[in-house]
Length: 122
View (cartoon, rainbow, N blue to C red):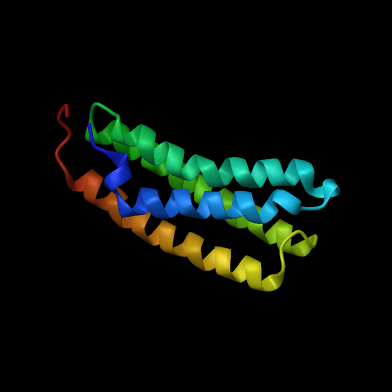
């Protein structure tokens, strides 16, 4: 068992989701269903990192981290849609995409580290 709140990748993913939550609070009503999908993907990243830290083996942890990575790719798509429909400005899109890319790089390195660790109960 690992304390997820001590992981930089978790804190960055959480901060990104919180930032998007605040940013999209005033999104147009027509964007409501896409807003929900975007935020679900954003929160899923940090939630799966947290869940992975509660896993009993390294391979189980890696599986949750893989889901977090997939959620990051989904979030990338939703950010593009948000920009294209005018719910996010181009500068907001670019800033959040940069933050997301940082999360993905850190998550990728974390996944590689977890996979290199022998699979034994934690």
